[in-house]
Image 1: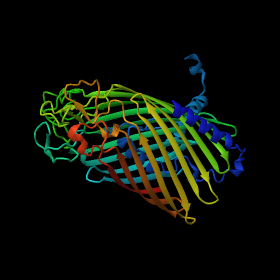
Image 2: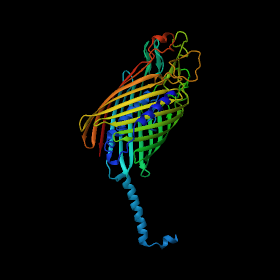
Image 3: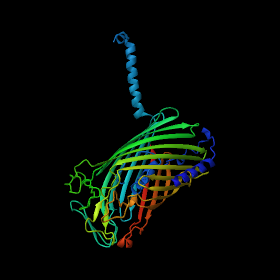
Image 4: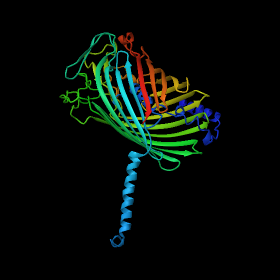
Length: 72
Length: 440
């Protein structure tokens, strides 16, 4: 619980430290790049996540679903 | 009927034509919508030192089937083979394990980690439909199914994303459910039952299941079921022209059979630490419910040329597993068509409350598993990927990852001769990933 509080405090500090700029649609050229997507390489990420899922007790976080596996 | 009888021929023709046109437009929407087919393919070659080898090709095709509406199909095949720990602890004597039919015997030398060979194949299919419900609301619906020799899994999920603040903020709510069935070839063993033969799986397509052993619930039985429910709430925020941030909270609950039917636990003498002659080993037993929580944060930042992805995850569950994960990927743009991505990941977890290296003879734990994936350990991954755009629509990449898991080799709970053994053998794994993105 202590860790969660610390994490929440750290997150609040990060968010409050970041000013939110009103980015206009014509200024979103960088945001539209493939490299700026939250998951730029979905298939590569799928294979990496499959490795981690089969070798570790923790999983998930970025989304829901994705299918089960007898590997864990 | 009266109304229909009074319609003129031209009206009837108009109605019929409209019907045909609407049918045709539906057809065009699904098959002939003028958009390119996005193909994303990769093959993973995964290899653990002295243990498991996996080859996993993945093919994903995505097509826009309407205005802002996409359909994605993903196909996955896994070929797995090699040796994996069966849960028994290394000790100072030779240990022998055999498969139920006696066709395979594994002789483990003193001080060696007991590994047993296995071989299996898995196929998975997933369909994903993304549709705009309004100018600011998008839905994403997924169905997935996978099958192995001894395991089947079916799942579905739905997500709604709501764009706010001139599309600078996106709120996401998602739910998912899974229905999994495990059905070992030799049946499901009695949890905490004495091991008289060691069960493992050998992939032989078309083979008839063998007769069940007394300690198993029967190879022809229905197997065991596990069901899962997941929910997620997330926010994605554009912080600046160069910064994107995501924060998610996920909750998940799994119920049913979660033991690994192939894992066993050594039963040791409480004074000497030696594995007992009888019972020797018992099948593991895990709780039949698990509640999971995750907090996930990701930031993407665009430098003048390069891009960095930073992600952190905190995971906790009611099995007492607590985990931190930090993931960093930095993209160096080497030129207009080529980039290089170093990757670093650090993962740590605490042990599940029922994890134990062994069971002391005479004690009767409610649950016990010696699966090292439930132990206290750290894992570090170093990776890199080089990619090159070979045309305006195509990119190829080659990635390499090296993962090392380390744990406590000599835990304080070791008893007698166990103090001389390495109870956590490091896992070292390398992955090569070859990928191709293109459009047709």
